[in-house]
Every structure is written in structure tokens, then in C-alpha cells.
Image 1: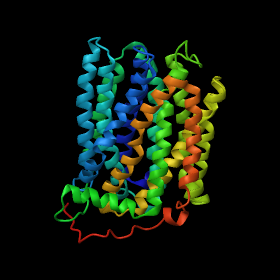
Image 2 (image 1 turned 135 degrees about the horizontal axis):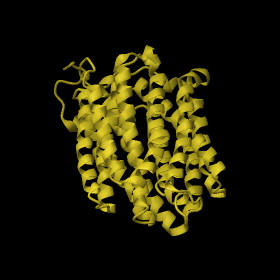
Image 3 (image 1 turned 180 degrees about the vertical axis):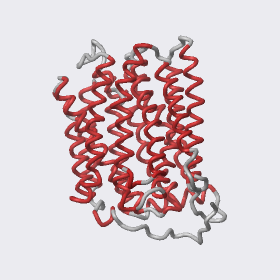
Length: 414
């Protein structure tokens, strides 16, 4: 990993810490919630609250990422969510647990995630060479999944059994640590931009850049449909797995171990992402990973046995990482640096912005017809989405050098 350089290492370290915090929250908060309610709509509402900021804030945050120093934005996002989530954790420490408070916790997490993740993806091309993007993204996404699931998920299961507040106060401290790690990173990371431009003009340029490239349109449409179905599926999966009345009947700590299997698959995917992309091309990696994801998601439709569901988790981890590495690396390769923040935000608005809609639908469908029919529909949607969108996604398009932006002269401001 040394060849990626010390600046990448700092970003990787900060990402590792903040993603451990994410894992504690994303697994720990639903585990606290199932002690308060078994209502599918109420449980799925947690994912709605966590992802709603992408619908509301993605585009203006993209403008910020193309106007301000990207390193400082990530620091500010981590300090901000450390403060908000820490204060909410103190309330939980007093023994006052409610669904409303849990919604506030994940909403605060989501706001920080929009700023931090959009900006980090826009910052990475300034830290590594173009040919290193797949490897660097593999390392970042691998660390993300390991911390979210392999470490964060089991740890969340243990912490919830001790204290609900610990799964909130712990992440607050980790977000603060992530901010501290980036402070000494040398250099200015304010991108070049036009001397004068309104927010509306900047947003329009990002959307236009995304729309004018067929491969980006196809990737955004594919990602939106994949995320819609995945959010519907996983927003209520805890009800399938945890509790005596659930089909799997797992205890909280065992659910954390199941999530750790997903991380094990993600580690494998992250380690081979660069090699596999170079060997068979990004298109085949993308098609293979989405196909694997769709078929693996169908396993709980036919069985609740631990071993097959564990195999599913490993397959989903590997497939998800390979898919994400391919899409993120392509976007960083295709899009000009000066508009990358806005294109990232527009892209993620479409993709992650579909998650609250999917989560809400998941709660409604599961409450109406049950969990397994929902799982079957979500798995089928993955394969249908791939069939509809794969046409423009070709190796040449995924590896194309950035075309000039169709706008006026650019001036470097920092």
C-alpha cells in the first residue's frame, strides 16, 4: 500500500475510523430499535432518515465540493456529526430511548455522510495517479465494508447488550478522530472553477455533464434501481434475522457475526478489484457482480438456514465491493476534475436518493404481504435493472479520458 503515498494513507486512516463509526450506528441503532418496536414501517423509517439527506442536500453539497478546499470540508463534516451525535448519545445515556431520538441520530449521521462521502470521492483523484484509482478505491471500499460489518457490526451487537448509549457515543469519538487525522495532510485541495458562477449555474453544469455522457446516464439509472431494491430489502432484513419470532431466530450478537461475513466477502472483492478489472475489463466485472448480487439476494426466499444465508452474505459483500469500485473509478476517470464534485453529487442524488423511497416501500410491502415476497421482488429487480441499463456500459466508455467541460474559461483559486 506504500506506493499510494502518505496523503492517501491519511485519507484511508480517516475513512477507516469514520466507517467503523458508521458500522456501529447502522447496525447498533436498528438493534436498539427492535427492542422498542417490531413494526416494519417504523424499522424501515430508520433507513429513510439515514438516506433522506441525499435527496435534500446532495446537489448543494456538490457545489461546495467544487468551490471549497475538499480536505477542510471532510474535516468539518466529521467534527459536525461528532458534535451532534455526541449530544444525542448523552441523552441516551440518561436512559431516555425512543424511536424519535433514534431517527435524529441516523439523520445526523446521514447529513455528515453526504458531505464527507461526496467530497472524499472528489478528493481521491488529487491524491493518486489515474492508473491507481481502482486499487485505491478498492482499499477504501474494502476498509469501509470491513469497518462497517466485520468490526462495527459484531461490536455493535456487544455494545447494545451493555448500553444503548455506547453505540452512539463511540461513533461520535471516532468521527472526531477521523477529522484529526486529516488536519496535518499537506496541500491545498480547492479545485479550479470559474471566476463567477451562481449556485444554480454550478448545479446545472454538474447535471449537464452527467446527462451528456451516455455511460454515466446508464450507470446512474442502474445504480438508482439497484439501490431502490436493496434499500427495500435490507431496511427490514433485521426482522427476518433477529428475535425468537423471526424466521432465523438469531440473537443480537449473532446478527453482528452475519454482517461480518458480508465484510469477509468485501475484503476479498477489494483485494482483487484492481487485478480483476485489468484482466477482464470493467464491464464484465460490473455485469458479473450485479448478477451475483441478484441471485444471492434470492436465498432467504427459499431458506432461513444459517449456512445458506451466510453464503449469501459473503457473496453480497464481494459483489457489492466490485460493483462500487468499478462505478466510482469510472466516474473519477471520465469526469473532469473541476466538475467532479457536482457530478458526484448529482450521481449520488439519483443513486442514494432512491434509498429512502426503497426503504419506505420495503416497510409497506413487508407489512402488507410479508418479508419473503418482498425479498423475491427486490432480487428480481436487480437482474431487470441490469438488463435494461447495460447497453451503453462498455469498456471503452468506462475508461475514456475526461472530455473538456462545455463552459467558459476556468481559473484556479487555491
